[in-house]
Length: 477
Image 1 (cartoon, rainbow, N blue to C red):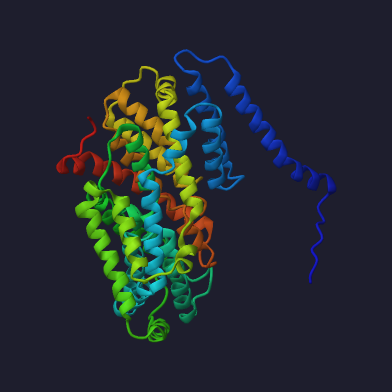
Image 2 (cartoon, rainbow, N blue to C red; image 1 turned 180 degrees about the vertical axis):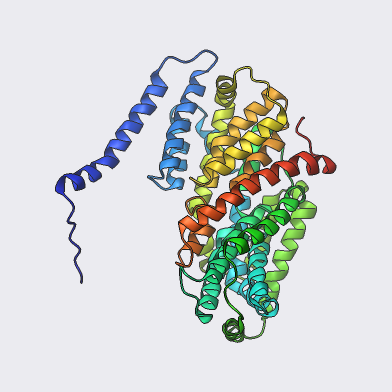
């Protein structure tokens, strides 16, 4: 067993060890000051405590010194402890429909991945349509985007990563040096990011935003309604993403025949498609149809949970097979975020914050939309997109009421851009997974990602301004 000796100076080691406790002491002092200071005019004592809890959670989310889920649990504890909301109301909020939709989506995605049908589809598409370097690149890019319509984008990246890695090795691409190797992994990551905003299923951030919206305003967004609104954005970003990637990293190989050897070997290893795969695929298809047709009447979570129950009734999946796919940390995170959003709204803190920050500002609805969408996509580069929604959405809903803007529109302004970080691994698991290949690095990701950052923000705002009115969506109530 090897032993590592820390050769740093003793004073430096002690200083680093002391930083964490010092951080918590400072955080506790900030919280105590915010709670005990004289209440500002127009802010209730409950609202003051809600803001203090919000600030503490904001610092913890940004610093990431503890897991996001633990910060959310901390919020759930503090809200009733300081009397912002009652215990009954606080814990009932954790049973929000969005939380159960997310749980159902995780289980469905786990069943699909465990059955092998998603892997089979991916391999066959790449083998059939990847006849040249350009076609193989496009097939990986579009495939990762398409599958991210139906599964969490980080799950798609994790599923496709070993396949793309094998292809890269089969083509003898040098990590960090081969342009084509960089293209393949950027195509994987960016495809997941772009496809992930296409439906409610690409990431749990949209259900979270809809949950906060429904809890505070009783308004909601339908499954099909959302996809129709953002589909043009997905198409434009796929085209822009391909152009940016191929300009930054020109294809530097002549053929991909050795990649097909890898793909064919893996396809043969799967054997014939089983009845189990057909059954799981059919249930997923019926679930999506159910969300589109019955989602508004029955509720998205009800349809998702019905499908989950059917999977277990027909023994298409066992709990031990899919529990590794259920990210309980994300569920805890989102439950806590919904509680915090409701606390800010119901205590009057969100409305007071809006008044304090903007005063009597009378900006146009378009300006408000553009600012929030920019903040959302910017903050996502540095922190979890769920944290971004938990921070921005309650304030934006309060602003919507003041300026007579439809809160549904501002929910889009925050929820969609929160999934469009192309630059850094911190806010986007798909990029983190791709970067672990060593074929790409953070510097290259930031360089091309910045162009996509600007492109995504501009295109999103143009679509909101010119396309949404055509489908009956407007800024005003």
